[in-house]
Image (tube, rainbow, N blue to C red):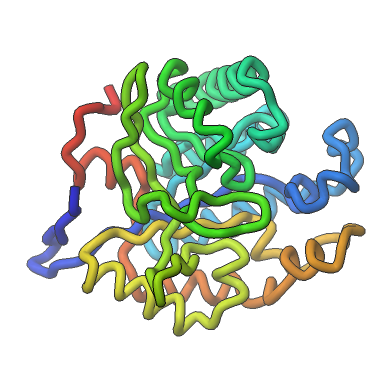
Length: 297
């Protein structure tokens, strides 16, 4: 299951997966107790501005990415989703309204992903085969969600973070892409990237970790994954993480810190990563780099 470097213009390189969770600043789980879903429409939306800025950056570096899109966003901004798709990027599901899986029943979860899948496929005309849970909320207690994803036609998941965190994570989970076999079939898992240091998995794959950690550490970690472990890194971020002018929300000190720390540096860090590493979509890695008993067809 070890992806090997491929050759382009006689030069070897490792393709890493670049992923974007398409949600607005007021939709994050950290502020869910302050901003109700019913009140989302009352807040200034900055999703179009930020996402189009990301699309321009990716076009500049000729990079394709996987966009995990909220169904609510797609319903309200269908042209944005069409533009992402028509630019050659992969559209995947992030659920409908950013609700944690462990706050849902299996039946509610099924309705959520089925609804979102239909919305996205109706807009793009393309099959949606990938899913990422809100705040990586596939944990030990919610592994049942994988069974439902398989039944609903998803081929891969990117929700199991192999780390310790106060709200998510399965620390002993595999660190690299792997097949998870369930009673009703199999699904590919693409965990966000970590480094194994002193017996612990250290997250380097993006989001708040990209903002908090020095870019030199992130680059060192990705090179270690690419060269020493000969694996693809999986990086993620959100459109609101490049927006230092977004309105401030009330919340706990921890939530406010996590949300805003080094937010003004994200864009420059992304540009540096795009200059120094090769990136593609999860679907590209899944289809071209791994031999699996499941397919996108």
